[in-house]
Amino acid sequence: MPASAAVPVEEYLRTTYEPDMEYVDGRLVERHVGEYFHSRMQALITHALGGRERVRRFRVFTAQRIRISAAPRYRIPDICVKALPHTVTSILEQPDLAIEVLSPHDLAGDMIEKFADYQQAGIPNIWIVDPYGKKVFELGSSGIQRVSVPILHTGLTGDLDFAPLFEELYEPAE
Image 1 (cartoon, rainbow, N blue to C red):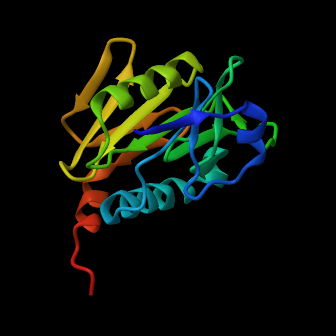
Image 2: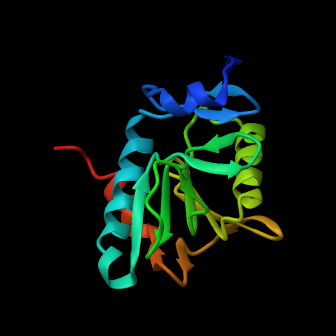
C-alpha cells in the first residue's frame, strides 16, 4: 500500500479523502478498494450481518475509521462490528469484529502489519475474506488460520456461512 508524505494527525482527522485513507506513523496509507468482487463481497457480508443487528444487539460499519493506539495510528477495516450499547464518536474504538476483504493488489506484508494493528487495538475477532479464492480465515493467538468449512462465528454475530455469499458473488450479472 503506497504511503504519502508526513501529515499531522490533526490534518488527517479533519480531512475527507476519496477513498478514505489510513494513518500510520504520521503518513497517509492508501487502501485498495473499488474493484467489483471486493466491493460486492463487502456488500454481501454487510447485508448478511445487518439483518441481525437488532436481535443480536450490534451495529455494522463499512469503511469506518478506528483508532489503533494512543500514538496516532488509524486503520479502516472494510467492515467492522461493535456491540451495543457503545459510545457514538466519529472514530470508533475497539470494535468487536474487524473484517478485511482481500483485493488482488494487497501485499502480504502490508496486510500482516494491519492485522497486527487490529490485535494491538484489542479487537477480539478478525476475519479475512478472499473473494477471489473463495476462502475465509480467522486471525487468533496462534496466527492466521484458514477455515476449511467457510463458516465464521463470534458470540456476538453468530455463524456466518460464506458458501452462499460466494455463490451469490459469482452469479452472472443479468
